Image (cartoon, rainbow, N blue to C red; front, side):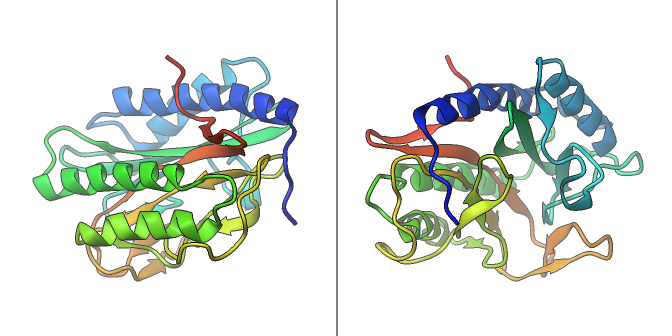
Length: 252
């Protein structure tokens, strides 16, 4: 069931979104070679909890054991932070973060290039960022979920990359995963109609190689089936009468 939000609820989510935007910026500026993914998890959790009332959304969600998902290279999403997983020069690491504030969740992700990274990986990051912005631009009132997916898919495939079919964006609010699902592929004017008050997480997950995926034995981490690198960027977006409002973009 789709839960439309009032203006008051969207403002609460926007406040949480600013905490989350700060956490994303921290990941982008402070993640470096030699850290473990558990170091990153602790750094982000400490930052979130330093803001009154804010807590990590992920910790305990469906039994997930950490505050962030940290996914390196061929890992697409849901990597579990570990003291045994060291980040190396040349890696790309996707950091997916959720924040709960005053009973409402927001969700965002970034992919960080660690030190000197190969040109194809840098191109992957650039295309995935562009795909996110294309998806946001398509999130107009009276458009449909399919318009978002089509915009993402078209940009990615024209660049020679692929989007996953197995993982999707989602509605978000008082529960972390709400209706509707927001795939990164589709056809314009198909699917759920976008209505003012809808809040959704738009999250392109893009692979250099095949779109096929598999889950590791930890029952969380999803990787590319061909072990090609993947990137993940995400924002929480409110549909308003004036157009999409990004709730997790850091205010100037």
